[in-house]
Length: 402
Ligand code: NAP
Ligand code: MG
Image (cartoon, rainbow, N blue to C red):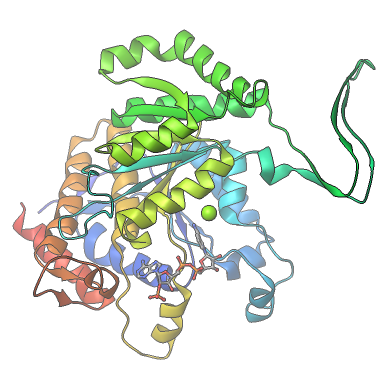
């Protein structure tokens, strides 16, 4: 069979540890036999980030900006232990943070649902996608340990010298104090990324804050979303048959629990941090969560939501058998290739991505899976496969789908 041709390269960001091992297996078994892969390769392994003083991460993000679509392998975010393990020159920043800052993007996380891995919430029939605003609020706060009685004030001094101030609290004794901020530009980028992604995936978009209590701060988020929606997206949403709505965060939480799923839930930074962990565990497994970074001008970076699966890698290095789940990484590849196909008008590439995803799901539903899924499945008589055999089983299923 002739391989599917590509016109524009996808940006390939290789990574670390067990996911790097899976990366190669996926390419060898599931991609390269079928697609004449055009990719611009960046090695984001910690070894190479250290060797290039992290320039490779910046270069890869710029390539993502240029070509529009990237697929990324999980990477190590260095900590003290990694400094010694890899003899690092510096504690390099998280590549995801660097890429997100360059693309000014929003991360959307969605579970991959299969029969036999049931969500803990009975009513959920379809995936729930969480979009988390990745700038500001409590993550860029300043705090004061208030030692004793005194007045706390919030003061803004404009460049022209104008002063605006508010009394926060008259302390009669010790306490704590916090100041935080956000910027209109970042909120607007977040809003546009959400609206674009909703149109892209034809799903309703929910947005919620605590604007009844936070009448300026949270209300600004609500207003910016509404203004951009009315001016730029309302007609397109109506045409696509999807809905945008705003509600109070309390109401959103209650509705999410009673919903069927199948929508995007846009969250402020803290809400997104907390709720995405709740949603992913309620859907069953971190190894089944996909993640895509979408910039407000429509650039995409696809990846798995999990990390480099370090514990399995050390087993692998010792020559022991591993059963690491490659599903989220495979879906990162199919997500990127489908998007590339869509942008370049290559239908075969889109169909290939659909078929490969179907093969993954059928393989699991037929009872062949990795250990993490075998532990939580409701299916009986399952076969636990090792990392490589699971990928080979997917290839076999794929071959039967033609
Ligand atoms: P992790 O790699 O997500 O793994 C945590 C645990 O979750 C694993 O030990 C494993 O549990 C289970 N798990 C995760 N993915 C799995 C898969 N595909 N198949 C089977 N089991 C899976 O998180 P971590 O160990 O905290 O972090 C390791 C490294 O990844 C760190 O250096 C961190 O900086 C990096 N990281 C990168 C990203 C990213 O690039 N986006 C995200 C998060 C973390 P068992 O051990 O019980 O089998
Ligand atoms: Mg969290």
